[in-house]
Image 1 (cartoon, rainbow, N blue to C red):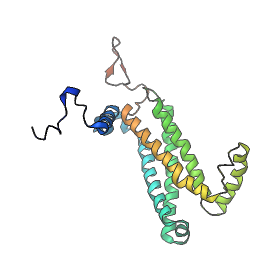
Image 2 (image 1 turned 30 degrees about the vertical axis):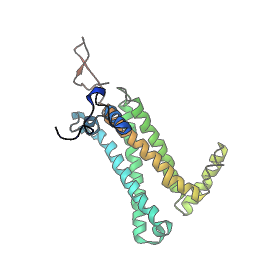
Image 3 (image 1 turned 90 degrees about the vertical axis):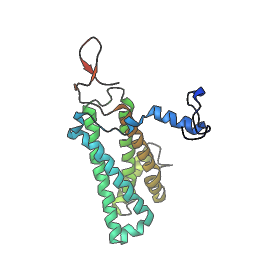
Image 4 (image 1 turned 180 degrees about the horizontal axis):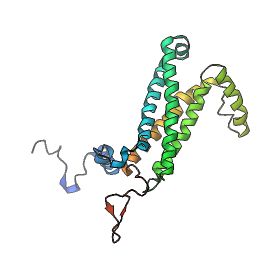
Length: 228
């Protein structure tokens, strides 16, 4: 057997060596096993068109993040004065439009499929929260367009936010504050929640259609049920 004695796990403690890094790795493998994190097969019902919108939502999000990073690198003057900047800005806008459209279809599709079945309640909740955070990100995006449209939206939103008592710290008329919300805080929230959502989908599996049979049989009934 290759390796020194220090490199090999100590069988006396059940292989629990490696310090805190080994403990984190073992915990991660137990929480999300590799065969669930990166599955090689999927159930047949995943071929249905309704399951496509989750992937389309993620694909649009990738384009949103990449084009947003390019816009942030070159600044407002670039996307207003440069033809290339206007093109990237248009890509950013339309990827956001597609992202919201695909996400709404995905959300309603899973709602009518009762996607919280089979211990998937947290998966459903994280998806719904991603949708709410995305609304905030899109709203702040409209506020930082630096045109008459954004000025009108900010002026109309000001009174509504002041009426509920949050206008003092969420000032829609402050371009710098809204810009930071749009490019830092809300994107981090959306991406982090989306990653959590994907991990939960991998862990629990995609929800089957209502009434779809699975390989797991209910003892004593001869019928099948969803996996827990």
